[in-house]
Amino acid sequence: MVAKDHPERRREAFFGRLKGPKLRQHQADLIARTLPALRLDLSRPAPLHPAALFAAPVERTRLEIGFGGGEHLLHRSRADPACGFIGVEPFVNGMAKLLSALEDAPRDNLRLFDDDATLLLDWLPEGSIDAVDLNYPDPWPKRRHFKRRFVNARNLDRLARVLKPGGLFRFASDIDTYVDWTLRHLGDHPAFAWTAERPADWHQPFEGWPGTRYEAKAFREGRTPAYLTFRRIEG
Image (cartoon, rainbow, N blue to C red; front, top):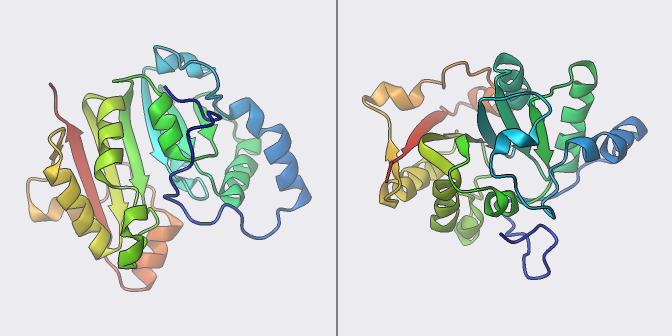
């Protein structure tokens, strides 16, 4: 696998800006002092079994790509202590918000990565992840930017490689064009099957879904979110 700092490996730019407003001093201190203990080091070989990445004993491993402020990730990691969670967020302010929340409620079943998720996907062992969440990703609505959408054939190959047979890829969005785009791309990929059995399934939030601030904004602005679940086909 290509390590994070490999000279031939660059970010693939599926995300926008890396920084927002200047961090408060305490937030900056958390990035400098707390994040290194939780950050995955891709310069080292990946463990054969991802459970070795966590301080607590875990039975499963779940990856969230682009966790924003971390509301969903914090809820899931608290509700399911037997699962190890890896959260990816390159936006510094979002990472600082999550680290602030962890001060009062630390997690032994949580690891973090603050760079391009494709670097992590290329590092992880084959068939090592039980579930991947992609909630409200940047829709890149302009046609000339569609190539920057995270859901594409190459990244679906990456997800198919790291997901265990029967593992789940969950996608949530309130942007109709991105939902259609995702259904089309996943429908064309031989490694995934859409699990919906009736029309209401994809408007029903995932089990245990806590809601997110992006979802709340969608409702305020009159958009209806979609919740898509795809299963990694065995074989």
